[in-house]
Amino acid sequence: MNAVAVVVVAVTVLVFAYVRSFNRLVNDREVLDDAWAALITELDRRHELVGQLAAAVTASPIEERRLIDDLLAKLRVASEAGPDAEARRDPEDELAQAAAAVVGLRRQYPELDRQRSFNDVRRELAVNDDRVRDAVRYHDERAADLGRRMRGFPSSLVARVHGFAPPAPFAE
Image 1 (cartoon, rainbow, N blue to C red):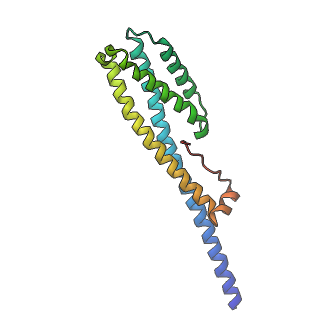
Image 2: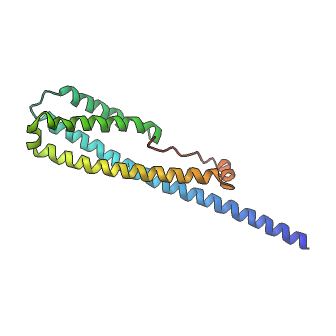
Image 3: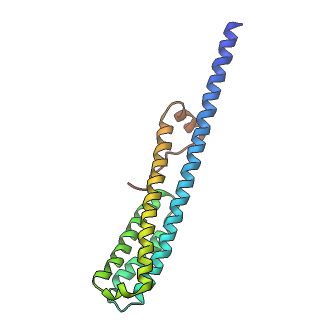
């Protein structure tokens, strides 16, 4: 009778640990998915702003058409990038660099600073860059949390059984 009670308690503890690990993994994955959705929202907003930036600069009498064409090409590539962090990382970085180069034209062409649409978009892009950085940091922290949980015991076993994939950070 005593041995049966020990077995029942042991099985109950194992089932509880398994269910608890599974629920924590699911919760962490949902938090990571929410962080990814917030990051995608900010990246999509950047895409809108880059289009507005290109339009504002194109409307100005500047001679740097090559930078605008490069910006629009990088916007196209970033817009068509895959749905995961690894596929979007490099195109988004290149888009941000191209946008910064176009914003930098204001040093060569002071008339851009007198153009309201350019300044409005430039300011919105600066705010968006901060929001993207915050969203990347939050996403990557959540990815690291899930990765740590998946490496721990018994979560590593539960993750393997249920097909949890190790999360990829957005920043390298």
